[in-house]
Image (tube, rainbow, N blue to C red):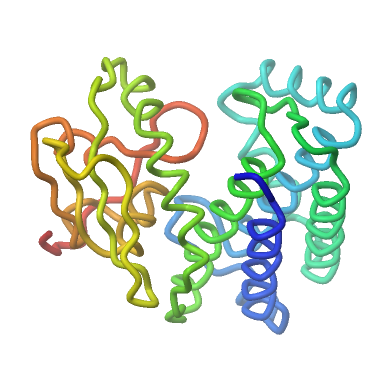
Length: 264
């Protein structure tokens, strides 16, 4: 992506949409359980605030970020949950203020970053566009958990195109974290956007293909829904296997969500 401005703008828009959802919540609503086991609405927002803070350090103070990485290596199974737990213990108004300040600081830092720079991260180094895309993906995914807890139906937007692109690009990563050899050939991905546009990736004559709604693809690669509850269709054995293991986020294989009884 030559110009990261569009994805930074979409990250800000996604964050504002979630902000509108949580800004007027009561203390009881902040304490509601979300689909992520052990996480309340407050934990979801605290996680976003914590990750934004880490991202700002990665962009503006790499020595400080290196110390955060050392903490993560010292507690590899706990550091994400610990960050969410600490933030969730704050009064809602403070948590909300911290999240707002952190996400603004990150957007400002990304807009000011030199062209072509790459930042350290818990996984491979990230470009400006990659970091903004990853933050948008997490904001959308955790925002979905918040909406589910509140019983709110969100209207999908074409901001999903960034998550789709990330999901496609992380195909080989998903195979690798499961100890599997990634397929050599590209897949054909054909998805229908919320606006009705047709988003296509990969060669037209590919043997393995994935088709369906872009929303369902994003829910799959963020592991917010079980494959059997989504209207995605795979052609070819490798594409079929990918839909069972797809994940666009860094780290070890996710646990995913249990099926709700839907059919693909």
